[in-house]
Image (cartoon, rainbow, N blue to C red):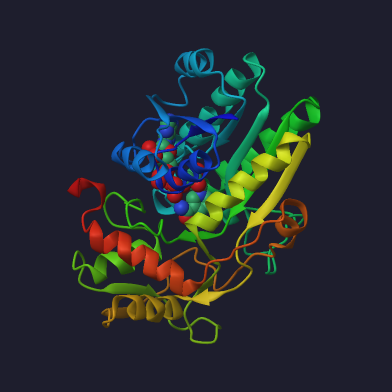
Length: 338
Ligand SMILES: NC(=O)c1ccc[n+]([C@@H]2O[C@H](COP(=O)([O-])OP(=O)(O)OC[C@H]3O[C@@H](n4cnc5c(N)ncnc54)[C@H](O)[C@@H]3O)[C@@H](O)[C@H]2O)c1
């Protein structure tokens, strides 16, 4: 298949492009490089032994998208492009709604004009809210708690309305839990700009000496060790989930929602200890005040993805840490070392 991947130079996108190339698909990536480096795609090409095409463009630019459809004739789209920092979305909500929601509308309009109606969308566990008991199940009523999460919820609504309006659309809404880890080669991985928002890149940057210590937000939650519990998923498992969703869409029209998670909660301190084991030395940390908006614990019920897609996670927390550490150790400054 020929597949357009928006946001394909980013963290999850680059791992997914590699999985797709390895499975024999042809890939064209559209990315504006707002939060990524083209170096990621060069390395993906080395690992796969063949390259993805790359177009530097913004998904809000319909003319640029039309040109990509005209030139590359993709048959399906995997849509990662988006801004993703919860805290930043509170400060600059218009940028988030414009980039994520308007960008997706532009993409869908361009797809429609080119008779391409198969799309896998990066949604998030963030669409669930504090009213949802966990494990989270796809059929629950959702209710995101911040602008970033609401962009995902709104895009899910738009895609659901589109699917209901026209039976030619094949739409997968993938709700990711907490992607971590890196490709086992250590050649590609997560390379956040500035101060990392997520736990694993923060731990990894402390371990490699770029930061002094890990701040653990809250040690007094009602969880077994007092720190938050999350559902961590190895990024290569996540990439394989996209390939499975794409296969499913080939012969299923309609709108489908799947949680992509492990179904297990792991606490911040458990993750820290697992990372220390991978590094082989202690990692300094300090427990500080809770962070506004953090839920104490949640994880996925991933049984629908197993039933429908035959997909489930196979990689352990230890592998997540070992692979993440290999990437960080070999690339202390991320792609900037290249
Ligand atoms: N990483 C996570 O924890 C997580 C969890 C749930 C959902 N998601 C979603 O998965 C997707 C990928 O996440 P990621 O972690 O790989 O993030 P990332 O920032 O590494 O990748 C996103 C990519 O999209 C590009 N991009 C952003 N806006 C664009 C635009 N207007 N036009 C073209 N390209 C644009 C960025 O340059 C970047 O390469 C995002 O939509 C994110 O919201 C991520």
